[in-house]
Length: 255
Ligand SMILES: O=C(O)CCC(=O)C(=O)O
Ligand SMILES: [Fe+2]
View 1 (cartoon, rainbow, N blue to C red):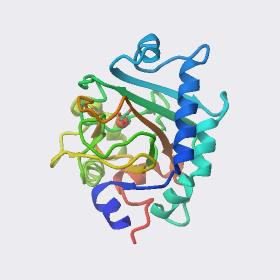
View 2 (tube, protein in one colour):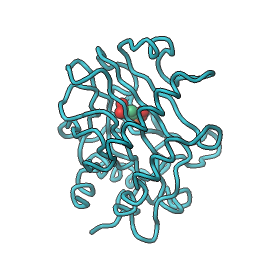
View 3 (cartoon, rainbow, N blue to C red):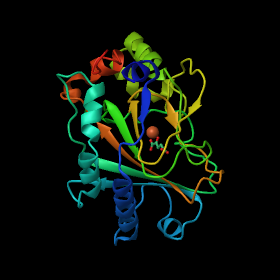
């Protein structure tokens, strides 16, 4: 499994969450969506509450809100799983925020999440303080077995080729999005796109540099897709980020 992750830049692990944990996660999301002062980063609140087709994103900030999704992260042992991918001397630090992503059918993706991208450059303008991260962890609260039901899409191996691109230009080129396609994603060999599949209760890990995009929901695989993402840092990522993006396996256990 580790070798698959190193080569492809992503990995899904089935049966991490129990059915009770999945149910608890879904309840937490439903309660957040109904709560007062609830705001979305993407999508319309009324449309979400009415279950209209679309794509919806919001965050739970653990510093400010009851950290129900951090509790789920801890109880499901996501950090420990991440640490098996990372080098033993740089274990993951606790995430500060959870990102909730919902797709309600019918949805044909459009907009920034639709094109291959990395979650960046996310560098705070003027300071060059990095807000890159090491590893994305996603928990799937709904079934993802069948493509076309809001499944994520990835371009395997692009984390390595993006790393090579940055090692040739220097780490700071990560912020030079004028040189990139719209995603943003650099103009590198992409290879074939893969739709990620798996059962509810699976955990998905992806390298920060891996090209990915949101998928359509035109299938009949249920009433919605619910994923919770945590963006994880290896210890000292904020110090080592330049090395971690130019030598993409630097923070990872190389089997
Ligand atoms: O739809 C998804 O699961 C991916 C979302 C995404 O890539 C993002 O928010 O940056
Ligand atoms: Fe993304």
